[in-house]
Image (cartoon, rainbow, N blue to C red; front, side):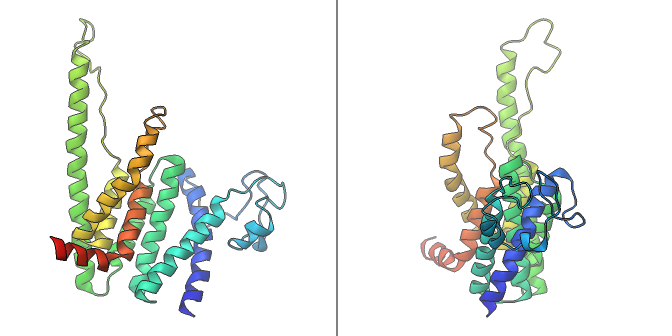
Length: 271
């Protein structure tokens, strides 16, 4: 019964996530504007918004103008349900489970926005962090989550500045080789940022959800997951080489969270 309730509720929340993914990057309200077709702007009927089933029954077409409805909609709804089922199966129904589930579902929305728009909205990022911090079974757990979040936010900030300095210094040295009499008083090199500010908050959320040891494992796993994509992206243009990293951080965090006990046993037995 718990899992059935979780599945249905998560499907509905996944439907709302689709609205968030579509509207938040455009600075549109995700609550106070009726659902409508993006092509013909016709307001959708309640039966057009049934998670997964509406997309299947409509055959992926708008009921009014017959334009294609992205397969992203049922995929996000199904992923939301699977994420919630995995967490409830692991921990049972409880208030901390609700907060942790909301944190992961917000990270899911961030991942899709990062994939589609290569941006990470601060509003959703901070919301995921807040849910992660309060996903604890006691006040001392909330304090510990907050401390771990600050630790990884600070660590990623330091890493960002250090890598950015190294990359910018390298560009500066290369630029000096081509200085002319008229350009010597101007900066002819770019400031290179090694990672986005959004990744820092995501790292803080990871710290709140996983703790120190497991977050380090998740960061390593995210790099492994991203490596094949990055190698493939090197063949493309400069824009295509900008691989969004939030989806890999999110996937790695969820995998490590689900298998945290087994991973901790391995760490304690071998290190």
